[in-house]
Length: 129
Image (cartoon, rainbow, N blue to C red; front, side, top):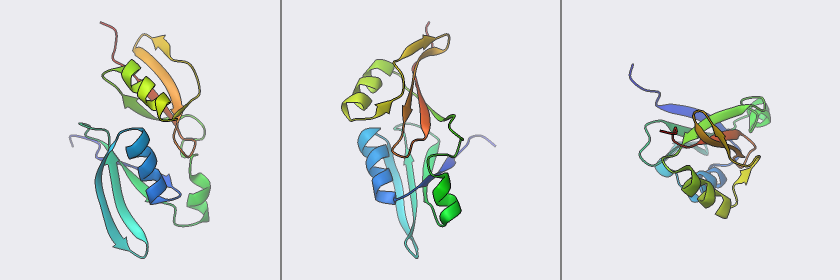
């Protein structure tokens, strides 16, 4: 085994999720293929990244209840940036909601933001040299 390929992320609606991840976070839409019965195979990925998100539309009430709660309120996903301040400013300009001001940690700058469903993400900058 060499890499983690995809992480399934429960969403309410494919198109609203694509609008957020592609339109606000700048991810690439890698695949959007119909699967029948209103189901689609939708994959987004940060530019140049290996691991992507499979945007999985909730199929029942149990899955719908887990949208935005897949990690129980903890930071769920970690987005690495080669230029933290550029990406932080771009996200802010596009209305991404940060839950805290950026802070410096031993591993680099970090700030927690929420996606459109309330999942928490860390935006992580490069380690200080």
